[in-house]
Image 1 (cartoon, rainbow, N blue to C red):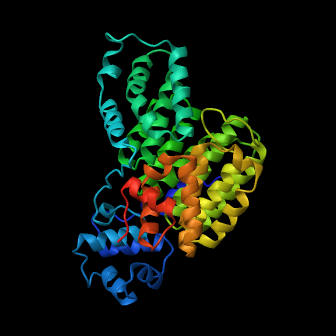
Image 2: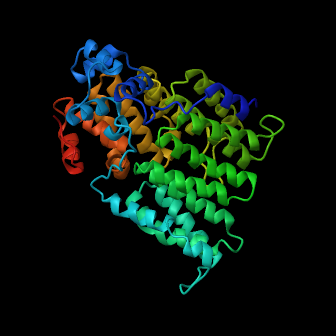
Image 3: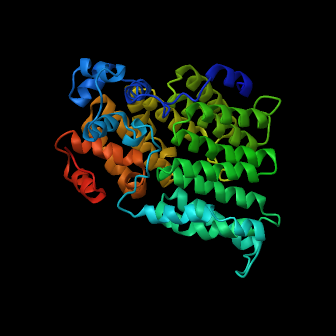
Length: 414
């Protein structure tokens, strides 16, 4: 298995490949348009503007000085308006009230007394009870019950930190990992980065570090640091890759494959199609060796997850027709029904984006409604879900169920 070395990757990729805060807004618009695979004419058509208007904005000849126009541009580019303004995106809180839960997690991550002073007045949960709580947290995540998970995480974070003095390092790493994953879902990339970084820092052996790096890659992508995510995940995969290709323990191979998929997703966010193809193909080879079955270390990796990644990367690279074909093949397979609610709903959002890019609004509506039926929080909490819903609402008359969903979430058309 010839995984690209982390040193060569860093030399090839240079910077982080995102629109930095020091760039003029026109340059940021141009970078995001390119990443979305749109020509100036396609971008202009979706905005209802001329290609000349787009060209002048991107060159800085015309200034974007009205926030309503910036919102329209951001909606077409599928980013938060604050990203175009060079500021960190604010969380996109849906109708399910995830905002208060995020605040609680933020407060728990900001506490250092439990880690520094040890037990305290509150009884320390035994390791078996803590392990059950961690398992419940992961299962809640896989069922996409994000508001419920956010409510339980603050106490779990503190308990895991206090218990860390014992032989519970793996549990602490898992707590930070699931925290990072749900924060990414809620649009809290910066806070997710903190949790993922703590997972990696707390790990005391290579495999634990590698599992934490999966969430680190997710968080870095969420804040637009695709190049950094690619470098980190490839380095971690390289570290645990077996000396003989595909000849290692299944759990290590699965983690290695999951890291390669994260690297592929990061490469797609940077528009690096050759790296995407190489990384996904390598992951597919590992998946054939690993096969189907229950994952270990709360890492899901098998041939089906590779197919999900092929759809997600195709959408990100602007290959919407390919993504639609792969999606329609995927949902006919038996393996589709075995996916968790979180995986199916997240994939359906990718499919909705693909249908939108091909101009199939009916297909996008069907995928979005099915995603909401499968896991409402995936549509109503995630910025990606709300963005797709907003694009549909602005695109003209929509089916009644989509209109009701838009009203419930607070998304309206023009």
